[in-house]
Length: 238
Ligand code: NAD
Image (cartoon, rainbow, N blue to C red; front, top):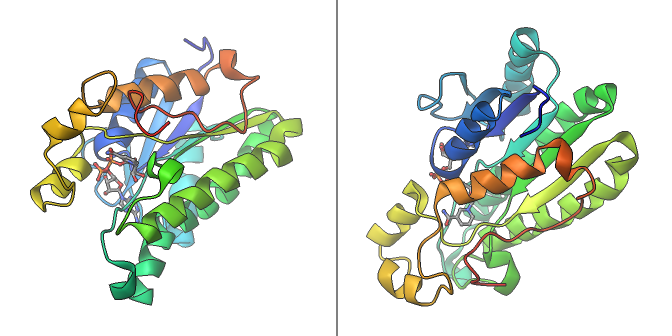
């Protein structure tokens, strides 16, 4: 779609939505590296805990050496959590903030110099449709993802003049290992079928739905779109 071959890093690209994004960006012609705790699902995978800045920096050095400066970053690594707020330990709160929010701090800050140097960049943060309405028992997760949306808007204003766009894609109800784990633990409340009946387009989302949106946002054609929170949710939670 872009006509330009760029170097992309996709965090959380070992599974689910991140893997579909990595596959799609590769089909688009980009050189793609995945950072994940378990990157085995993707050919150019790096074992990285994105909450650990040293690991991020070390892997980025290798990617730059192999592929050149990184000008597309998709932050898809995430960890859900379900706990009544009164039972939520500060350790669990901090871990969910670390994986879903602080990882975005580390990866964006580590990659921005490449983008500034190239005068071109695309940052896409995968947040969550739960930020539209809130979600009981997910206060830590929703707080982290809502902060990602706010961070996205602020960075868009700060780095627009440098040729860098920053957008968030909050998915809603996408059929991934994360969703299936939640279902098997009885955390969705009702069945997946019930949720589908409440979804205007009457199906669960697919990782490829998010990947297609990221593909466009990463393209040359999307250069006038920045600071946006672009819901991909079949009409739910809008
Ligand atoms: P998933 O569990 O299939 O994939 C998440 C990936 O992140 C895994 O490969 C995991 O190993 C990786 N990861 C977790 N912690 C990490 C860390 N510290 N360092 C590096 N990698 C780490 O989940 P998914 O459904 O594909 O979710 C992708 C993103 O979309 C997440 O940010 C999630 O919060 C968000 N999201 C998903 C849905 C949905 O319906 N599936 C809805 C809203 C938001």
